[in-house]
Amino acid sequence: MFLFTICSILPSLFVLVTGRKLPEPEVKIEVIDKPFMCYRKSKYGDMLLVHYDGFLESNGTIFHSSRKDGDKNPVWFTLGMKEVLKGWDKGLQDMCTGERRKLTIPPSLAYGKEGKGKIPPSSTLIFDIELMDIQNGPRSHDSFREMDLNDDWKLSRLEVKEYLKKEFQKHGYSPNDTHHEVMVDDIFKNEDEDKDGFISAREFTYQHDEL
Image (cartoon, rainbow, N blue to C red; front, side, top):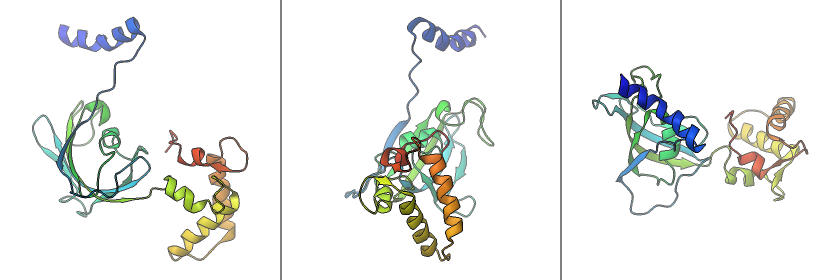
């Protein structure tokens, strides 16, 4: 009990004495397999397609496998946008298509003191992750350049509207100007931070807390 009490107050004592927070625990990364040729590496903003197996470090119990559970399909997510565990966002950067990694993730970068479902509180997790594909994410620089028709490094309402039209047609939907105008209004309300009537490259790719 005494040891637990001491351990629990150490972080606060460190902040009080030094004025700094304790460094955030890191993800342990082990490369299991890597292709000889790597044509593209993952970065924040990319959409990744992965297969994974998740284990409890404490006893090796598997709590989820994309290959065995559910529809048995790999999963898509956008790297760095808080769509997955913080440990994944940290541990899957600079990864090649076809690469496999083993991530050991401390509780603070996983499900914390609360736990979730089959995962007990304060659990360190191990993931075996294979990267199947990398695509441009909705906030990548490549997507921005595709939308920026006149290459002036900012998006006008017209450019955003034209992009929406093209995307709707690509997926088999008929153009709807009224609907597109509403969407454009919503996009500029949230993304045009300085309210100058344009979305800059920084505003477009910046990682907002609400994402």
